[in-house]
Image 1 (spheres, one colour):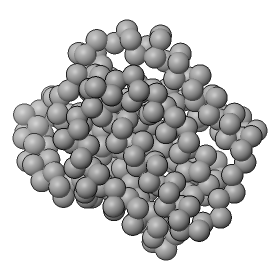
Image 2 (image 1 turned 135 degrees about the vertical axis):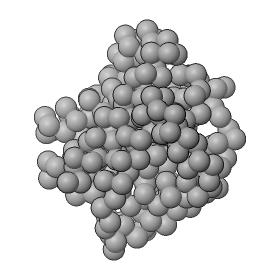
Image 3 (image 1 turned 90 degrees about the vertical axis):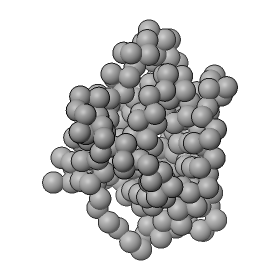
Length: 240
């Protein structure tokens, strides 16, 4: 049992417990850095991401923005499946562009020009959701674009987290189904995955009771903006 993997899971589970996304978004590049390949990394991370999201959905399912979720099912999920299926054939590094976009979204509340630009970009919602599917299928970075579009809607924290959670869980379920249907040799170590799941669930319970419940909507929005900014910086630095 690798200590570095356990640390990565603990930190990314904390982030996902707050914002509904994080285990795949940050865990994937971190596992790549310590020597895992892309598919092996997502095999480790997908079950943890799904379990945390399912707990969040069970807690707040009444707050889901189902209008947005239906659009994600229609415009995003098919492209997640298609491009994950093709990912072993095509590798494109778009981390820099995604990072710049996240930095821009994070600054929307501090600049009228930036806010105008973001609003004009997100008017083309169908195209945006399609691009999000392509990016997530190829890189696991679609969660960053998901957080950006939800953050732009200025929801209360319960709506923000659970809408991201149900969308992100759906990404993960279809990724697993795609890997199974494609016949990819899933070398799953069930004992290891079980321990990783326990760590993720434990971190979620602690985060929910000690951190999430203490955040009001205003502070949650500020932390969410900071989360987007840090995500953007990490992607930009990683791609340089």
